[in-house]
Length: 249
Image 1 (cartoon, rainbow, N blue to C red):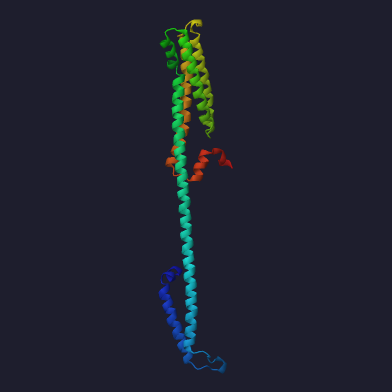
Image 2: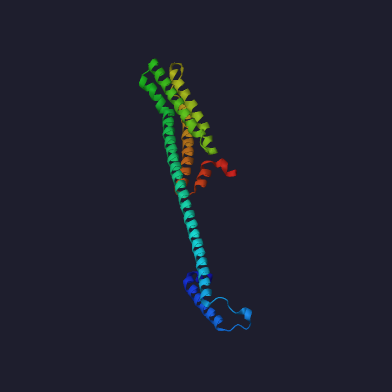
């Protein structure tokens, strides 16, 4: 009923105005039973007064409606501004997480390639037994492994996920085995059999562990990025996703 009255407020106002005018006409047509009830004002004065009060009330009502609509518009504008700022921040987060994933993929690929048995043994084959060439290439390769190791250490240990950070153990093991393999080829004359099958099998077993650790780490980062991209998450939810330790606070 209130909704209908609001929708037909103009018509209701007209009906009340007519009823009020008729009521004034009737009251001034009836003779007062006692002298002190006789009107000191004319009907026109009463109508003028009532019109003034009505117009004042109408102006107040219009101002109130205008204020309410203005407040609603301002609130909607503020919400749109906040949403636009959040979307801008989310875009920056997506851009940053994509860059971090690409950087991690490149660094992991370079490190795995540097630690592969075929890569390191290739230096020995290319040197054709020349000790100085073998020593120079293996020392340069050890420096490369250490540089990539340091890059991966920064990438992995800065990850917010506990499982992702645990992958650093596999990286350390792979780096140690690769460096030992380089030293193995440096001392090839001291080795009984450089192509020992058991040694190669053991090395490749460790290398497969490195590949497994790589897949685990990159899988975690890809899953996190996909959640931000496709789950329609709010900015607060994204921040909690990127900072798991804050979920309990």
